[in-house]
Image 1 (cartoon, rainbow, N blue to C red):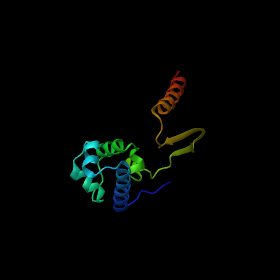
Image 2 (image 1 turned 90 degrees about the horizontal axis):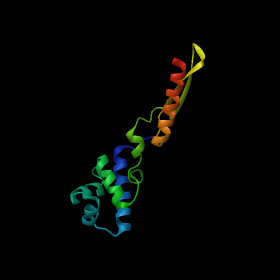
Image 3 (image 1 turned 180 degrees about the horizontal axis):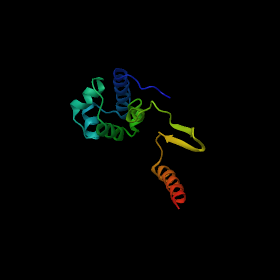
Image 4 (image 1 turned 120 degrees about the vertical axis):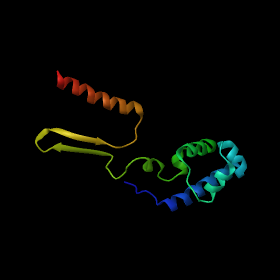
Length: 129
């Protein structure tokens, strides 16, 4: 399980990635700000590594650069949820070996999550009958 990067290192890495991608586009700060729909001083703060963007600004920056937010900010997804827990956990009930507890803590497509919930609900309905 990856560990979260300390905030000061995340700021530096974010600034480095932002600058690299901005230069690849051939943009100066003012043009980057215009493309992202943010204030130029916000771009300056990010490029200096002084601050990290909020989720909305991160989305705007990524969209302007044509990348995913995770490509800009190290551990963006991991920081959004608790990663101290395993992604998938299965525990057999001590009192009933035919019963188990599961815990799923990972990102997945919404359609897959709905299918999983549907399986659980269908099983619960059969059990209640």
